[in-house]
Image (cartoon, rainbow over the protein chains, first blue to last red):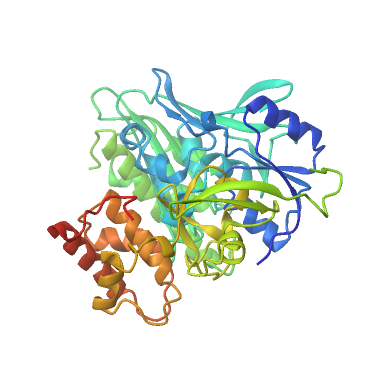
Length: 294
Length: 175
């Protein structure tokens, strides 16, 4: 498979990258790991005049854990996120989501920023990022803005990134005490597979770890964009974790999830996966928060 | 560079270290690392399979990490280290992974073998005594249509055993 012709820039400063992108007047594509962009260019579904590589901007690959939380450079690779000790300890669902993207070789190049801005309906890092209250730092020649990742994806393959903006960092707050998260993905094979249904759950328990104070349930491959089901979250909040409560939430999620069937899985199977993934993700998140499901 | 004439983007001079040797090549922006290796440098041990990052036949090590050469632009490797299957053996002496693949019957048609060996090499550099499950997880992005995978896993485990016994220094980057 051959690539079409294009021009190439590899700026060594973020300011230069923003300038080049603005100069390209909408005909430029920013490239991070390239695992998605180059495949799309080979298929002919994208044809940029100029590819602007972020590969020389070392600052965008950093993973920092300041007091306030976690700061991921947008070009941090999935491999590094999936194996980072602090992320495995405090933002577990994100490590799991990153560890499920593609296969191990893809994850050495694929970046979290690419997964967000590609905005695929099956993206594995978007549900954990939304469940963990992430915000996105968007940089352009005009300056920077910070927006919540929830609501950033507007439709399949489209997000609220302006043509002259670059996603430069993703920030997640430090979870409160007694918090936990879990991402469950169901696929037909264990690697190199598009998600049939993915569910990220995050919970915060009270100090006695007897009651759920907050819960978030976010799904991928259920709707064209990442989907939260607040009605199911409310069935868990305020409750002592029990099988009965988890099943009630999972049933409500299944009832409300607007699943569609396709060649990968029929509608009723996907509906059942919503139930199963909700149940498992919630149970895992509660147990990681130090709670017990009775 | 002529940004107004995308049909003829000019070639750039690329400096990259391939198998320990510094190479300078003029390449067009749309040249992939796979094309650079196979066409410009004549290193045809790296195979062209699917061309879209699904099969793992084109795997090379970029700064020690396995990547799909078909999904990396040649110009992205500026100043970096690339290792291909041609750089794995030490002259005529096979690398323990290569010998183990022969001894364990891990090679049938051979098309996936370069990628399998390089992924195995990166795995053993970070995890010198992997479990069979760890080998399977590392090889999850490499397709083989002949062997059924068992003998490939056995080959990597055999190499790990032999390298652990001191038959090889096992240092990443030793050539």
